[in-house]
Length: 335
Image 1: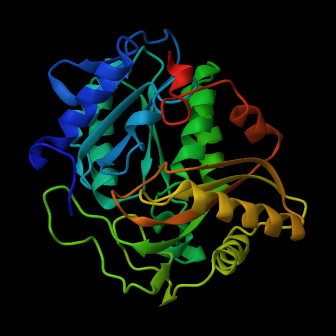
Image 2 (image 1 turned 180 degrees about the horizontal axis):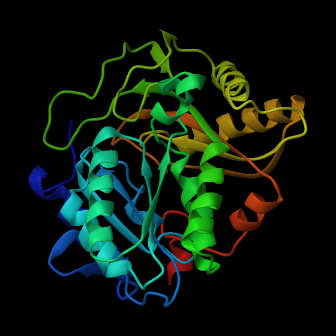
Image 3 (image 1 turned 90 degrees about the vertical axis):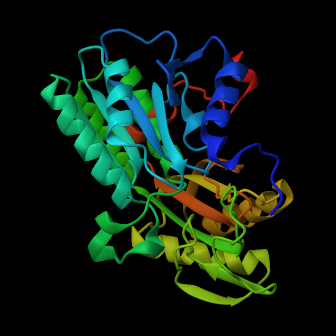
């Protein structure tokens, strides 16, 4: 697979270098680390939000830093969690005495390394709290929700978490609100074609030219059903039926909707899918408060879409509506 890169070993530090150069002076590296970025002017006397995970899913996580979003980001190599030392360095750079909230996808490496970093931070007198995002309904049954993976639902959870932090709440309250957003967020996707890790010649998974797979994960983890490619309307309806059943969502609910592309998905496809999703949800009596489309949680050249819904109440709506911007959502707003 052709990619416009230099040495595959340096893609993470080079993507971070490009990001910092593009947005100078708003964001800065921490010391010599080229995989940690924080706001150059950190707010005082409030909880800080640190997000991160493996690289290769951009704009997640690096471009979710911003006003009303994350205060700092750290990433590991492609599909690899950042190390405990990296997370601890970022934590120490952010802490202003009120604690640091970690938000990241629920994967074994991220869980282990963040837990280790939290223990080390505690030894240095820094409070931390953790919200693991587990929105991928295809990855575990309803009785094992905390074993599910975190995918595009990160966007909604990070948005709420950033707003709660920026509102000046205590760490325990920021944690509660963020966990509430996580617990009301569900995602299901469909894969059409694989991506390739930089420097690798083998695809992350294999699909026939006329096949699709419902529920496949961002790293090629097995989904719930593989079959012949169907028209967009049929695929969207199937995904919505699966999503509604698992929370469950019901008539009268109000939700935020994200139609996310996996990297190679065109705006044409996303607009077709969101149009059908809005029509189907209206027929089911579910009100869409706000909808988004875009490639936000990706896997290189992977083709396909995921649908994410976050069920709202007055409290979550308050933090979702809180003013905020980040490069992933609006580059012009970052000027």
